[in-house]
Amino acid sequence: MFATNPDRCRIVNVLHGIHFREEVGEDIATTLVVWLNNHRDTLTGGRTYHGGLRKFEPRELEAILVPPLHELDARRVK
Image 1 (cartoon, one colour):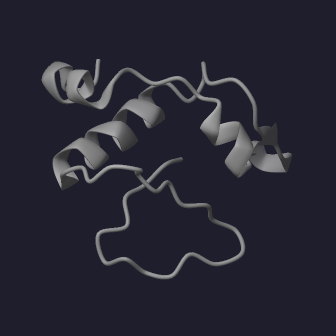
Image 2 (tube, rainbow, N blue to C red):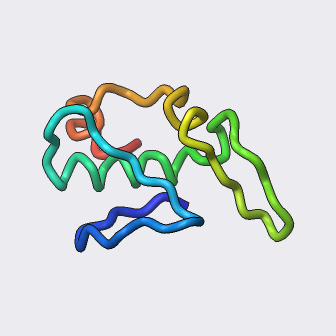
């Protein structure tokens, strides 16, 4: 599951963070999280652990293709 971190808590051992190369609004970041969660069954890569936990390593996340962020906001995550 993907989630936002509005309080900017430190990310420790078991979590990875997505950092944008360009400044994006909170609404677009939230929309991206919703899109990733809605499409997580079709995302390639990652490992599935006992109990169904699916973990993506940073390089695997870099390889995931998502729609352009300005289009994600316009479509409101279909």
